[in-house]
Image (cartoon, rainbow, N blue to C red; front, side, top):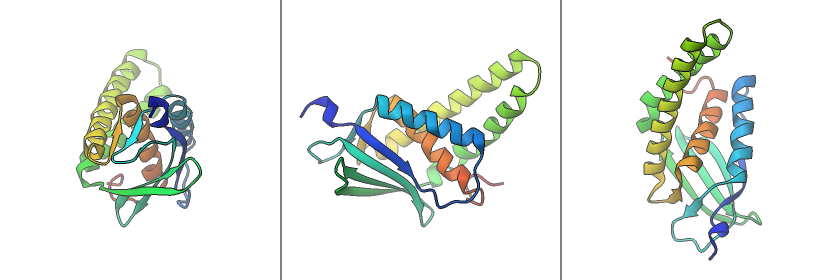
Length: 165
């Protein structure tokens, strides 16, 4: 199979949650465009795609539903969100600080917060990559963009325990 066969051609998120934050929605839209432009997505044991990915939460877990380009179900994987709990809380806090800093003067503070935000983003994306490794192979950039989408999904559901308190 050619390398181009192991990629995502469509990505969707569960839209059943009520709340929407324009900033998070913007980040999600950018992540989807970037993800579809360039990604590596290799479901273990499957001959090739391209693939469609639907991301949702189910019973407090992250659900990744993978189908082929024609929509035929390939596999679903479920990941516990518990290993991500601390990083998601930290990421939520630093994103709030970042959005607050955008509205204030002081470029140095904004740059420092952004550097911290990128660091947590990278750390969480690497954890996602590790947790997926036995199920789906992804490169670093794909993992980063998938994390952005997962964060957007969880942020929509503001009552989700991982992001609150």
